[in-house]
Length: 73
Image 1: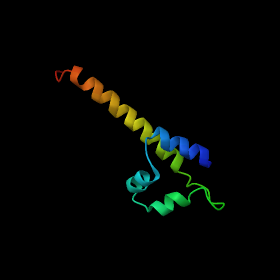
Image 2: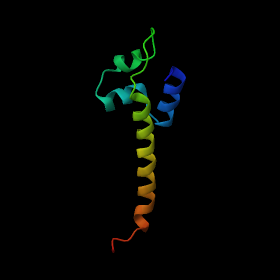
Image 3: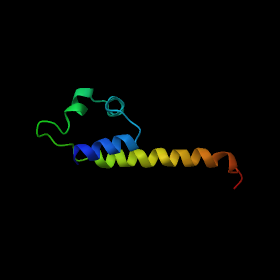
Image 4: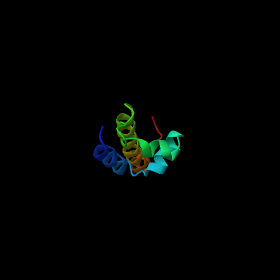
């Protein structure tokens, strides 16, 4: 992953680097160092952010449908 892709995924996730650091329980400096000085991004970051975006989208769908769903089975 390159810096442009990382920034796009952060934007899609509606997260700042600081918020990502908090969610991952790592320091902001760690996140900020990714992609600089020849350092790449951890292999799992892309899939983690993509899954975060999907989960948020599904949460929105569930919240929208919840009032229209019956508890009857």
